Image (tube, rainbow, N blue to C red; front, side, top):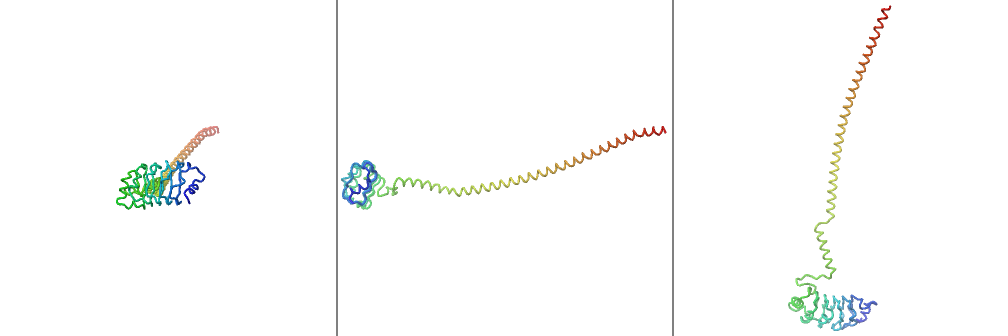
Length: 263
């Protein structure tokens, strides 16, 4: 498929100014066709395996940050990138026909370039290839996916966020699974409750027994006191009755004596 037709399909009835990403992989064209300065909002452009031999017709793309040009036949003319895409941060030229360090040195003016991929280019076979590239392009951080200390580059900003999240989860894992602590806490709480309940039962049992003993003693005292008072009352009543009988007898005796005298 020609590049122009592919671009028309990718637009999907949108205007060039509305497009931020454009993928034209595997369409066949030795030169860039169908792109214009109207793609002023374009941030990502991929033209992998298109058989490009030149970048001369690349339009001005001021917001372009990522450019995929892998598996083409580009051998030079990279200086146009700094003029047309000044804010480029990622450039993939792997699988092209770049042979000399001087060809790569044309990227010096891409001041924002952080990642460059030249994998499977002939230039990678040169002695001290990596050291020379980092020396000639001091602005880049990653070359062929690794920095100068052989640390692998993150695939995207999202991957960096994922690494931070994973690191946080690892810290939580090292601290120990919360479930086990919760179960231990529950067991300890249950054992503490059991001990408290047993202590309460013992206290209740002791207090109950003590109350029963006190109550029994009070009942005994009441019984004794009540019995004593009853006997004293009965004795007093008997004495009063005896005294009354004696009084009556005394009254009757004189009367009886008077009767006898009259006789």
